Image 1 (tube, rainbow, N blue to C red):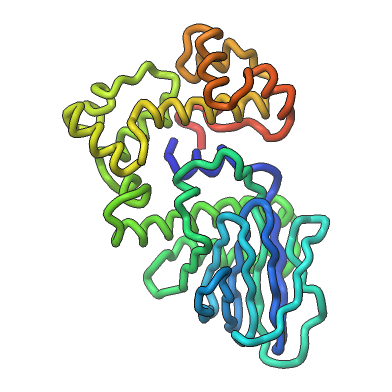
Image 2 (cartoon, one colour):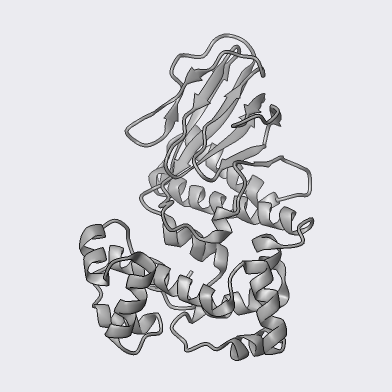
Length: 318
């Protein structure tokens, strides 16, 4: 288990959607704020990203990726001063332009969305900026480029298996986008989750917490696994993660519990044991502190919201 995979798994719902769009200048598309996350890939040609707020327009070229983590409004256009037309979201959750293309230079985009539960988002995703721009550069993020090529090919011509392949490629692309950003950010960051994921001691402790959330971890034992003294480990973990080791452990346990209550009919006693509580009473008390309601009430209110969540799979699952 790794933190980024678990963070995405904990809030993913439904199927990711996408559409391939051919646009001929002049054009300008405004994507409204939405639940979940959006992405835009330039397959051919070029355009401009018009970010939310006072940010300057960003030139996009073929192979560039834009990821909008928190569902903010953004716009794309063939020129920074182009008049914008609202984009609608169809029944399949894919973005469609509101008017037909013109006859100027053509830009080909893949635009789509991921359904994400923003209510209890992992801090590894909360710390993402309003949008992420990953330019295509020779020798950088080759795996992401390969996934984009495969996705473009599948969307260009439907073949047997396309309906299963496209969602799998979209999920893969999401993880490659996050990996690319955190790798680039870690090279220049001195703190936060970008550094935490690449710090040998902290990442080792996070690995063990996510692999065995039900284990009766102590700060001393996590420090030993991280190769540091108890005090040194606690300081480093708290500095980079923003929580003490045991506070993060409790937060992650309750996240797993909430997900399993939403997506499974597993007995409360079993869920309690999976997340490290030997008594159902202690689990109920901890859960109510975190969510403001009992596990039973939470389950009735959110039944069927998601599929199986993190913690349902064994450590060797892929």
